[in-house]
Structure formats: C-alpha cells, structure tokens
Amino acid sequence: MEQRNHGVSRRHLLRQAAGAAAGAGWSFYVITRSRTARAGEASAFRVGALGPLTDFTGRDILRAAQMAAEEINQAGGVLGRPVEVVPADEGDPEQTVRAFQQLVTRDRVHAVVGGFRSGVILAVLPHVARARIPFIITGAASPDITKDVRRNYRSFKYIFRAWVNSNRQAVNLAGVVKEILNGQAGFTRFAIDAENLKWARDYVDILKPLLLQSGFDVVYETFHDPAITDFSPIFEAASRARAQVLLEIISNQAGYTIVKQWKAQRPRFALAGNNNPSYLVSSFWRDTEGACEYELSAYVKAPLSSKSLDFWARFEARHKESPFYTGTGAYDAVYLLKLAAERAGSFGADELVEALEQSDYEGVIGRIRFDEDHEATIPLPYGQWIKGNKVAVWPERFSLGRYQVPPWL
Image 1: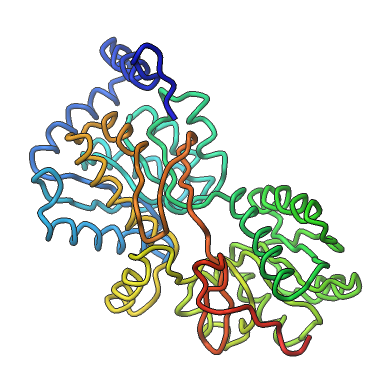
Image 2 (image 1 turned 90 degrees about the horizontal axis):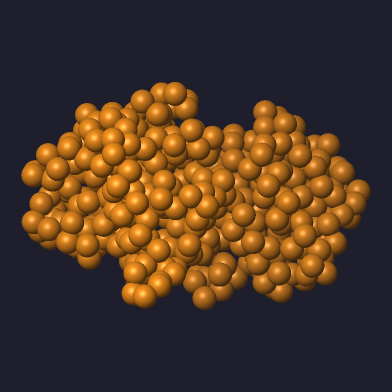
C-alpha cells in the first residue's frame, strides 16, 4: 500500500507534515486530544464503543467489545495496561458528534469502534479527522465513508472499516446468484425489489449490471417505500414477469413483512438477497413464526475462520441470543487495536494507524487485511432458513449445507 522513495514512505512524509501542522497550532481540539491521550496512557488502553445502545444494533457493539476486552485483560492486557471499553450512544448526527467529542475530550479514548447508521457516521468523520484518532467502523456500509482515505490521506487515514460496504455486498450477492441460485438451482430470471433509499439504490446500481454481464435476465425492478406494509403488488408484478427469484434489498422492519407475505401467498419464485432483520439469526425464525423458511439471505454463523464458531457459541451462551453483525466486527476491532498497539509499541494515534494498515489477522469475520481505502477484505456469508436454523450455504468453502428450492415452486 505504501509508495516508497529512497527508503522514505509516503505515509511517513504525511505524518511529518501532520506533525508540523499540529505544532503550528492546527486546532485547540487536537492539542487537547494529544494531552489527554498522554494522560490516559498512564492507566489503561481506552477504546470507545459507539453505537445505538438502546437497540440490538449498538448493544451488540458494546457487548462484543467488552468480551474482547475481558479476554485481553485476562491474558495480561496491552503493553502492560488493561483495556477499558467506554460506551457512547449513537443517535441523530448532532447527538452522535457530541458523543464522539466526549469520548475524545472527556473520556480520553485512544480509539473508537462501532458506528451503525451511514448518514450519522458521515457527519462524524470530519471530527475524526480533527481529533486524529483511529475509528474502526463495524456497521455503517456506505462506500462514501472511506472515499477520502486515499484522496486526503493526511486527514482521513484514521478511518477504517471492519465490515463489508454496500458495493461489496452487491458483488457478494451477484456471486450468490451465479454460484448458488443458478449453479445449484438453475434459476436464470431475476426480479429486484429494493427499498427506496440511497444505499439500496447504490446497491442495485452495482448488482444489476453484474447480473446482466453473467447472462441472467433481470425481468422486473422496483423500489418500494421503506414504510411499505403490503408486498402483494410487487409479488404480482414479479410473477407476471415470470421471475424465478425475487432479490430483496431491505434494511428495516419491512424485512419481517416480506417473508410473512411471501410464505402466506406462496408466489412462484424464491426469495433471496439482503434482509437486515434476517441478520437476527436467533430470533428471526421466532419473530416471523417460521415464515422465513427457505429464504436465502446475507449473514449467518459460518466457519469463516477457526475462531468464528467458538465466538458465536460463547456469545450465545453468555447473552442467550446470536450476535448482530455489528458485534462480530467490534469484537475483532478491539483485537486489531491490541495487535496494532503491540506492533507499534505505542498507543499513539499515528503509530496505531500505521500498524493497522499492516494487519493480517484471523478474526471472527474472517481473515482481515485492509486495502488502500482502509476497507477490510472479508467475505459476507449467506445462509438459508431451514427447519428453524439458518444454514450457511455460501461461500461454498464455508458452507454447512446446500441450498434447497422452496417445495411449492
């Protein structure tokens, strides 16, 4: 990732430039941050856990980060100091900016993990750049979050993502279509239904050309109101177009509605895609009263590494439910920070960034390495609901079963 000239790295030069800017009084906010960081280093390695703490999306960020911290502390901590996780609640953009600033100036954290809503996290990013503190995002998926890492490295090098952005999610779904829905089931005709939000439109802009390039027919496409309560017109239109699969792209409560109505109406097409409520692996079957059976959707317990299934078992034993995806990334992010501090021999922000860029870590979410945009290169597994369990079927090297065509087709 580095470009070198006479033995001096581009990033080393940028760090020198950033240091010169700070020395010239770049901002009171940054000066305050550097002083409090030194004070904080005297006692603990402090990691902020930022997320919507009043629901499962942020709750599991905190739960998983605390699990990682407890394990690290039991093994001796980091550079001789314990890890301390500091929670911060994500709300609207203004509230979240305040929460982030408090993590930096009041709580004196060395790094932050988490973040769920893309629009909110985009509002926080300028404050991350001013604070000069590593932030490993484990939920928000907009590609815009990391777009400035290469374009303005000096300011935005502190931003990393230990998850799969929406563009890469679309590429993954195209792979599922090719290898599972076509390769195993023989389907060739697809309809697309996405919620009418920017992330979902961007998703379709990537997905549809990939399907066409693979020789598949996209026979119907629509964008529904996120508040939709009746999918019948969409089902009827997809059926008239003779779709064999309806590809769903949904992030909200409509994910429950679509599977219930699909099972009740039994249209003659399979249901597959990205359904965020289906990420609630331990409760989605119960909450839909089994209506999700035969749905194929993203995120599932799978042996992505030697650590994956063990983590799921320990999390479920402790919390009596499966971890939401934001938690799996947060758990790995705390370990990534531990290893970065040990590699750097320092808790300094720039040193942590350089060490994070060198990461090659076997985590719960798979083998984690960061590209030049600071995006983790990891798989997003897909599973199918069968008899109360979501069974991993893709990527095939991690699969625990094979795709089953809904029996009424």
